[in-house]
Image (cartoon, rainbow, N blue to C red; front, side, top):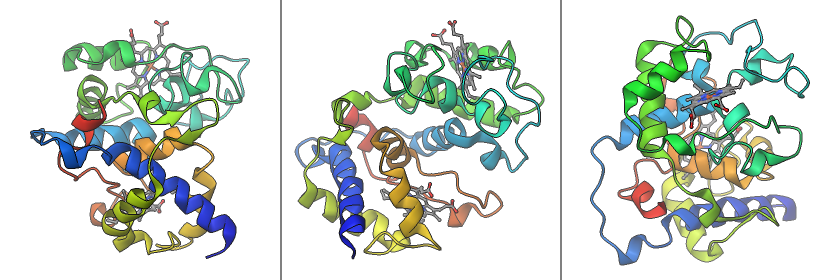
Length: 238
Ligand code: HEC
Ligand code: HEC
């Protein structure tokens, strides 16, 4: 592995460790709807990939006209674009920088009834008729039950994860390497793309917990699961 690649993979596995660090010491009941929550997390990430539809051609009217992605409908319909990878919107990682919108997070809706969140999506958000009903339910379930406090696992000042590299490497080797290869360069051209993600550990943590929507919506079996099937993972991060 090149030095750069080694560094990048270290970041991945450290993030990994951050979320599974305390698994060894606490037995936690497995939420029976974890798969559905993780699916909702992928809808939060890039819903039109999960729905297998094209991104809307028109920009999202809720996106502030003066901000960077105002003319990019492929970006400005993602939940994460306005509410952040850490769900905290203006109070989180997107407080500043090119993704900043000044919009609040969805963290205030953790624990809210699903129907309440779905009605938000069908209101000014304008997802009705664009996003399938089942996916609105899914992402609402994620908002209600799937959010974790990412600040516990990432040092925001340095944008680095707070985990243990050696243990993280073990988790990477067992949970992820089957698909991504020992060096993280699979499948396809992953070496480069996985590396590019590492500048944003909040994003990686979201994908570790929920998986990555990917380009092949038609083939669920080839989709990145992250570590979303790992027993008790999400409960241990909250
Ligand atoms: C283009 C920007 C944008 C996108 C994309 C977006 N939202 Fe929002 N969202 C907003 C704005 C603006 C508000 C209202 C904030 C306020 O009341 O100040 C909001 C509010 C919310 C709220 C209510 C938060 C609260 O505490 O009242 C929820 C829940 C929510 N959005 C979920 C989602 C989900 C889920 C998605 C993706 C399917 C999404 N949003 C995509 C801009 C966006
Ligand atoms: C079932 C196979 C599978 C497993 C297990 C898996 N992945 Fe993936 N992962 C994929 C595929 C396939 C893609 C690329 C999807 C695409 O084409 O965009 C991907 C993409 C990603 C991406 C996004 C990279 C990008 O291009 O944006 C990250 C980050 C990632 N995986 C991390 C992980 C981590 C960390 C683990 C272990 C916790 C993991 N994955 C487990 C199959 C898997």
